[in-house]
Amino acid sequence: MIQDTIVKINALIEQADRLTSEQRRQLLDLIAQLQRDIQLIETVDHEQAQSVAVLAKLASHEYLRAEQNPELIAMAEKGLALAIEDYEESHPKLYQTLQSLCIALRGLGV
Image 1: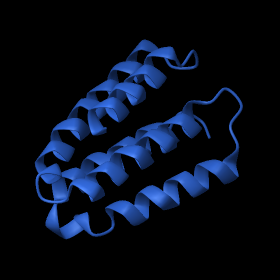
Image 2 (image 1 turned 90 degrees about the vertical axis):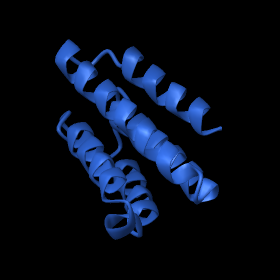
Image 3 (image 1 turned 135 degrees about the vertical axis):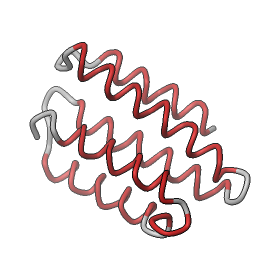
Image 4 (image 1 turned 60 degrees about the horizontal axis):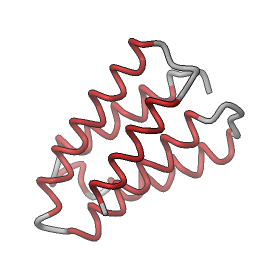
């Protein structure tokens, strides 16, 4: 399930017409790091890792839509923030990767 979600996020990024090649590369690098970080926590808390992956996909989808809805983006960000809140101390690398992903997506011009 988590691997499928990562594949879907990659597809969203690859298909997003509004991205420059540099933006696309940056986001794909962050997703690759996210995948590595999630694999580390997956063995400890599979359900939470699954939630993080699904919420990251939702946030990516909302940011990469041609016609963005700021309210949906805010909801996606809030859900992801809640899912990773506990990881700030216990898994700082995952937390930082997700923060970097949100910042990179937000920088696309929402």
